[in-house]
Image (cartoon, rainbow, N blue to C red):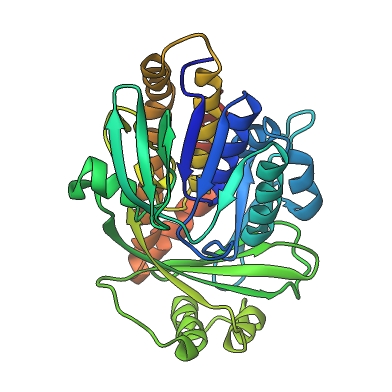
Length: 387
């Protein structure tokens, strides 16, 4: 094992907790802190495709996710009038790994927390980093609570608005808006969906994803400039109206849109991205996950890329090499893969939004019916490559 034996992870989100577990499994002493006062995570649900499921298998979470989630072989794509356009398969499963599982974000966070504690990680909430003092042989950390500790390595897993990235890599890598937004809401699974469906509308899409036999979540994605603020009480009506605009009077999703009006869990997220170029470390301070490479969710792989980062780091730190050599190996393995997924996710978003006029909408519908399965197969093969 390298000389990074005591590690601090800043951020108790999905990626940070999985990284903590992977590092503890190789014998590291791992502390996790998070500025939030409670265990919470943004969003309603998410999916892990086969690459993310392979990664969580490494840390003992696959069986739990199969228990709490919904296996999804692919996505059925429809036009607003309910015409089936194509199926975007997630590809065949491995012998013991499904091709995709959708699940509650808070549910995954709970089992990831349990697993991290089980393997010996320490988790402190309502705790941030006040100061970092880096030396050749370690990092002295002063916490926002006033106490401090020394570490061999500090990892910023603190998300798209990462303090570690801002302070130690520079404001030039702060999040950049990309012109799209997502509206999300948990809804009853009245249709009994067992796999996601997408309805391409005029200038955006509506996606329904089952979380269980009883619940699903809706994601509405549309182009939107600026950063308007909305009153929470008005958000169900706004989400309903935005979705209705996409449908242009078609009634294919009227049941789900009606449920949105009565939802008490509508979330609004403007899309931004982060890309930090080589390298993702400054000495013994490193950033991973969304802190280094936040992306749009169009390949459904933002969480998986974050989880993969931690698995790869643990694999390299377990080898008989220096910390620097381990960090360089992580960059060699991660940079090309994450860049390809990052770029393709933005391209997919832009293709979706270019469907506002009757002509561009019809072109998009034809693409989804005939060419999207090929584009989807490229994504499948990219994600299935070994990490």
